Image (cartoon, rainbow, N blue to C red; front, side, top):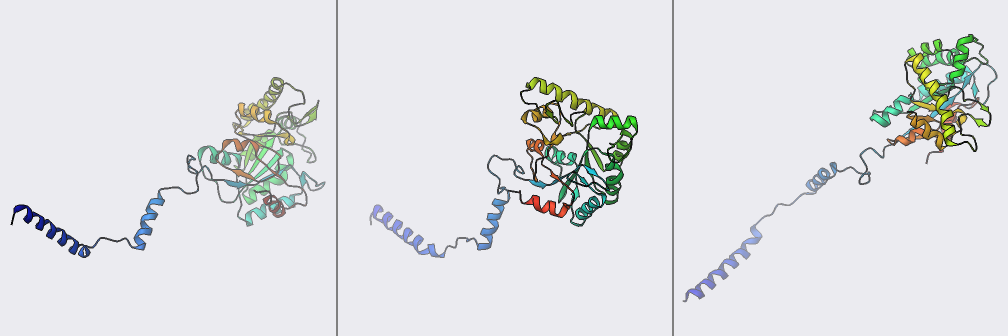
Length: 309
């Protein structure tokens, strides 16, 4: 037999041997459980529900109702005036339903510093700085351990500090009373203009007048707001972070000017619940719900929930 023929026979025999032994070789198979585990390991490091290019947590939002109060009187209740019993009823409701009162600094820290907010946050705001806030609201805030955001009108605070008039029908808080309240840790003070909380000379609150040049408007708003800003710093050592807009009357120029002045947020009178995200721009259009006489907290919150989209 020639060498060539012999080599051919050897190759054929080797190939036949391989084919015959293939069924005897066992390859590993993944069980259903192993496959599931493997898939979980892959997806565990991949965030879901966040679009590509969006930082983790950017889509997170917290719903925050901000309740707006003005005055508390034993008589003459109305749209902006409730009685002490109504205010206590509100605080009881919030406590029984596990709401936690927060301040503007809490919200700003959440947006800017990623500090957490409590579950069921709610904000209680008092505008104008009436003496009744001290006489009727403050003792209840202490009793129920509730925080408020208090926005004062600078000229009113100065005037009543000077004259010492404490008539509950019209008097405003004085600087010594504000100091006492601030020391409790339950009060956060904010800026509600020095002397633009009025309707005179064609201007409603601090809003730009029709036909008023932007340069003139900026000068008026800056002078007034910064006068109170500096006075609060001088009298309390605190720098307000938030501008509370009188009557809720403002335009885009108002917001741009207060941004330039260093404010990090603005409280409006626009109605609704706030969706707080990590977008800093949303802090300049914070909505509120006016608490009027015979409109209890339970109904107020139920009604405003219907605006959430």
